[in-house]
Image 1 (tube, one colour):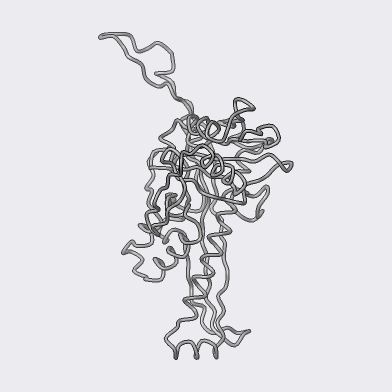
Image 2: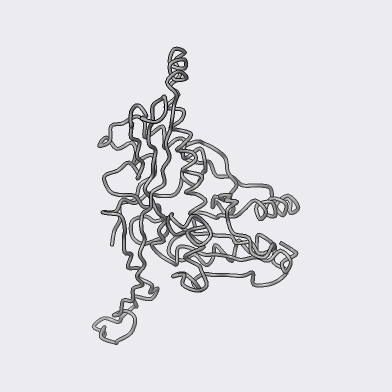
Length: 318
């Protein structure tokens, strides 16, 4: 199945919406985390999607001219794995007092616009946390995340590309090599780790004299660390187990043909973003605007995502 995937900026800039506030909100979201400058957004009909992933890697074979194709092997078989993803809503109210707004407006400042951007940045931070924590360790009312997908009991990705360092003496470069090599759906396009492991990475690079490589983000033009040309996203919400066990994720992004991860949003909306002017508040002296996003994380192909668990007590050479 093919999907239409676009960047956040491309979605909100669609002339169908014709509202200048959405590109401004997109900027605020992308400033909150560079992850949003890279991850694709995929429109779906309704509020949920069932993904039928082709889990086979050997679907073709070279055949002699006039050879028999009815061999009963994998070139004639197709196995799929079903996963379901549900969009969830995150929202907040921007309240601006009448007197404050009047004073700011007189000085050419739109306080409501400032408040809306602040809400958008907070939504971005909470969504970024939910991407990792999910419902098991994050907000139970939110969408499912990486912790849910790899949960021991019922995670649909449990046991798939779950790695540990091949040797106790492996350093961070060895670990990242193993992690990136496990991605087979497409070329690896992101690495995600927390600050503790990122510090290990930078320390090892300095000690080796290799220096640092950077990737320039496509929207804000920030230089972020990379490894083998793959951008590294820092996410301090990644779960730390029993003090010393840290997880590192890597993968590729969805490109429309079941290749990797993507953010979902309801079709016909600007990337699931919603800004509604509710007018004068009945309870407070001021105006109210609702800011929301309707979204979810989806893994379209389990071969496009991998998790490495490192134990700092066991892997002292990291």
